Length: 354
Image (cartoon, rainbow, N blue to C red; front, side, top):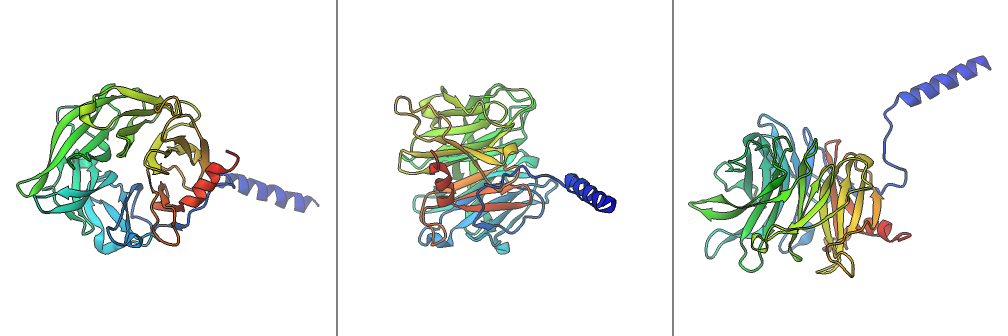
């Protein structure tokens, strides 16, 4: 009996010494997990194929210094296409995609824009061939002591197809107002150039920072995670002014507010999903606000997922293939991968006991 008790106690001690996951057993499981990147997965984006959505691509940044970082390209089952991989990048953080960027009066191209923190720049590559068209990078935050660019989101103005990049940076030495810079991107002299058109956005300061940015193109808003404070909402078009429209998600988060993605149920309704990073969950808010106030975004539900410490995410509502007839959600996990979820599983969790 004594021997049995000793073995039992040793087994319990060994079990207690193992790393404990914060992911609850009810967490939603992904349909696919991507091949791993080399160093540090950070943020995904979805490129929609113009004629065959099943051939669409997922881009994911691999965050690493000294030119060892890059952007990986995956199919919808998470298999990497190494022929499209971007290499030699100095600490890429976030990535976003725009369609039909005008090169001249008759030519357009889809583009991927990502931040290169080590060079205080954003990069612009054509899609789907993944070729640079920016002459080596567009410098950002040139008039600021805080230039470590992190987040980037693109806005394409429907009226004239003008393309803008909204960028954020590390919190240290950053202003509490005018934290985000917005650049108009144009193609001139055979490369993409950026022109600063706006400084906007409040920041709570302290030890936090702002990385995650998401644009609602149809409704005309930009959201960003003031990570230790809340999610802030502004008009995305510079012509609409710099008034802060809403702050929500100020409570209930375990610690950091991170990646933001927007799911369209209709042109004007849907969900805003925000990573509750240390809880391994996404907190979900109504895209349309409430009946009385479009800028009131109360919590709908917290959805546990199997990603761990997720920084970035993206979602699409389109019907891609048999796996994803109502779209899919992709989120970074800190084991060098991105996890790809069937939206129907997310939706079922949202509607369960709602």
